[in-house]
Image 1: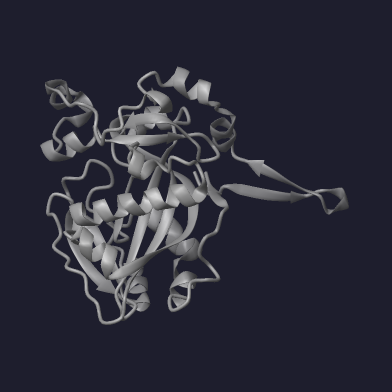
Image 2 (image 1 turned 135 degrees about the horizontal axis):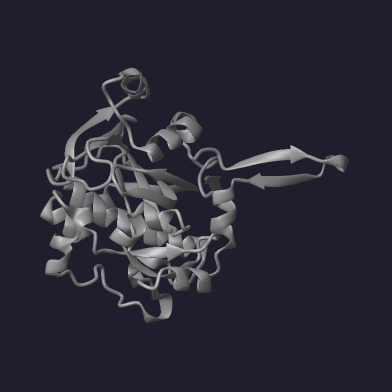
Amino acid sequence: MSVIVEREILLGKEEIEIMSPYAELVRSLTQGDVLELFPEVIPINNRPNTHSSASSDQDQKDTVFKGHDEEQIKLMNENCIILDWEDNAIGAGTKKLCHLMSNIDKGLLHRAFSVFVFNSEGRLLLQQRASEKITFPDLWTNTCCSHPLCVDSEIGQKGSLEAKVQGAKVAAVRKLEHELGIPQDEALERGRFHFLNRIHYMAPSNGPWGEHEIDYILFYKVSDGQQLTVQPNPNEVRNSRWVTQQELKDMFADPRLKFTPWFELICESYLFEWWEQLPDLSNVENDTQIHRMV
């Protein structure tokens, strides 16, 4: 599905939003509806406050995991944050639950983040996802894309946007180390995160898998005179490279290269405009709107 909202001008210059049937479905789901439709979701007040649910031998036997990497299967037990239309946390649901298209088709929504790391020369770090990845394997994408987990430090307990953004930043530091080998102390000390906005999108992947997320877009700028250690985890990252704007545009023009849908959406809608303002992001950061692309 593409393009979130169309606008129609009515008499008196009044505007109404015309939404896709899928967007209407997702917006209509209450907390009670989600918990009834997806009984595996643990209500927010009962959540275990752990990164992952317990795995078992059954995970390896699950037919949806047939042929997939054991380490990646274990990660599908991570507890993501299940959301309503307005990005309010409803409960905890496993990564597997969140990424099955059979659940996404019913409106199941979770929180994510996408980090764009820029060095002091203004180059962007890209990664090519590992072949072992269960969703969107081998595709090029931004520096790091993952999920805040349903734990105190990442959920945004106070419920404010500021708290949710802070939770996404904590998760980003954790995953930059896991995927790209960037030490957490370096990420905390050698640069700064900037929250740009949130996008809401849905995209099928390979086989039974897909994405349906409210994605927090974070820029990370390495401070002048500083560098980050980058030692990619081969189970997560097949390749990586630092690129200029023109080099990224050249990559998009190369038919041999494939990209994740969220990265393409962000590039088409925002990235190059934001990149131009990299020295001073004050005019484009901290956008409170959720930009719908479903």
